[in-house]
Image (cartoon, rainbow, N blue to C red; front, top):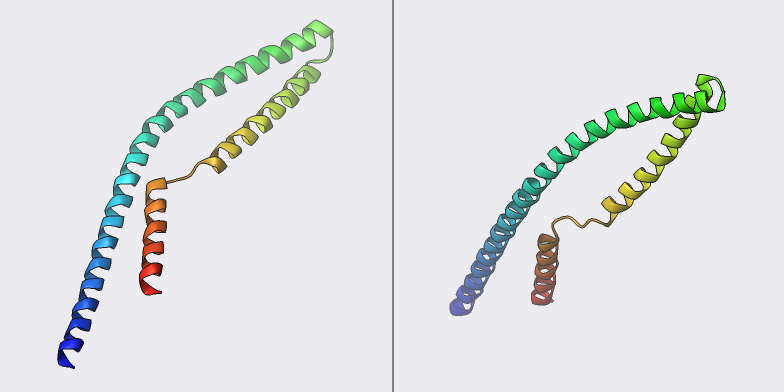
Length: 129
């Protein structure tokens, strides 16, 4: 009986050791993937921020020019030209917001980690059943 008890204890110790090693490897994978994604995102965010500032200034200048041109060209009051340009910019902003939201919704973060966690859960379920 003592031999069987000892082997069960050894099996439990080995299972706990394997689980600890598995968790350590999963954490290492998460850290590596996060570092990689943060590094990639940092460069993209910096470029996007610079482009956004330039685009905001350009759109503001273009909006003023268009509004003034509409009011002068048609002979309407200046406020009417600015109102038309404002409505057009609001439509463009809504369209870009819609596209951006769809892009973010389609993005899957850390696919390798998610896949390995699913595989590990399946493996654990198979072993405990």
